[in-house]
Image (cartoon, rainbow, N blue to C red; front, top):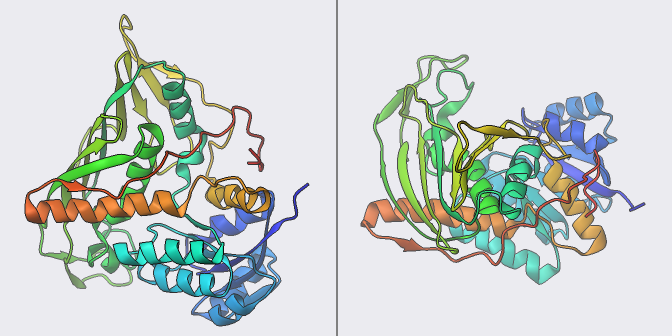
Length: 368
C-alpha cells in the first residue's frame, strides 16, 4: 500500500467541504492542515473534519509535513498561492481556473518543472462515471470517428442567488472563465486537443443588480463578456461549437453532444460526475441509454488530487494536469482575442488528451 500523500488545504470557503470529506476517504490522501485568511474559519473546518492543524497560509506553506497544497482560494489568488507553494517545494493542485492571466499559468508550469514538482488543476469531473462512460463509447468506436461536438452553458447569471457574485462580472470572470473549464476539459478528454479557435462575444447588460442577500440592491459594473459564441477546430480535424452565457433567460439545448461517423452521443452535465449517457446510431428509432462504467457517479471532487497522489508516488502521469488546465486557459483568452480581432487564434497545443480510467475502478482507489 502506498504511503498517504499529506495535503494542506488553503482556502476554507464553501467549496472546501467536499474536498475535506473526500480527502478523508480517498486513498492515498491525508489532509494534515488547513489555512484561511480568516483563521477562525480554518479552525472551525479543522474541528469539523478532524484535521490536526489550522494555520495561517504562510505557516502551512512552511510546514514540512505538507507535501501538496490544495489551493481553494478565489481565482484572483490562484497564481500567487500556487507560486508560493511551488517556491516552498510543495506540489500544488488549484481549483479552476489554473490562473487568470495566461502568462501566470505558464509561469506556474515552468516553475514546477524547474523544481521537479507537479501542478494539477480542477475540474476533475471528467474523471467521473458519466464522462468516463462517454470516453469509453468513443474509444470503443461505437459512434465512429468524432467529427463534431457542441456544448451549451446558458443561464442568466448568479446575482439572484450567490451571496457575493461580483467576481463573476469582473475581468477574469464571465461564463467562460466560470463554467468553460468544465465544458472544454470534457471536450478535450472526449475529442482531443484543440488547434485553433474563433469567437464572437458581447456584454449585453452593462450593470447587474444583486437581488440575493446580504448584498441585495448593490449595482455591479460588468467588465467581461457575458455571452460568447465560440468555434473550435480540434487537432484531429473535428469541429466544435461552444456557447456560454449569463444573458439567457431559458433554453432547451443539451449540455454536450458529440457526433461521429457512425452515431451521435448525448453527454451529461460536465459539472457533475454521473448523469445519463445516450447514444443513437443508424437504424435506431430513438436514443438508447449506455450503462455507466464502474467508478464515481456521485460528487467526487478531489478525484484529480487522488489521481495526482498516485502519480507522485508511482511516477506515472496525472490526468487533471496543469498542462491540460493551461490548454483550456489558453483557449479562454484566445476566444476573447478572436472576438476583439475578428480572426482565428492558434493555441499553444497539448500533447495528448488524458488517459482514460481503467474499466474497473474501485471506490476510493485510482491506482492505474
